[in-house]
Length: 108
Picture (tube, one colour):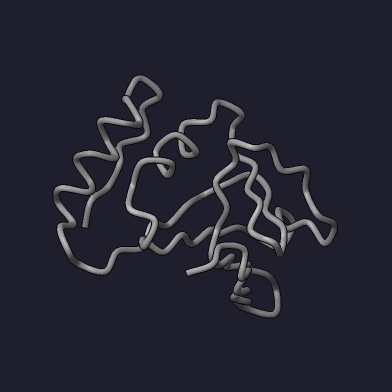
């Protein structure tokens, strides 16, 4: 497992290179926090684009899994910018338990 320390000073491209080297040929999933998600895999973070830059350079085969609480999930589509990296799955935790939504947003 490769864990990225929560420091804004870290270079997302260097972290992506390190994570890619560590993963090698193994199947890999990236668990992605966010402030808001929608069912089409759009993710809003803190507004700095760190995770978007990180995901733009890791292998496309890596599974992208966002996770949030029910209050952070938008039933309406969120605005997506050209540089936004989308999630393959969004896990939503609520009073009824866990919902896992497959976005089908990226063609694998």
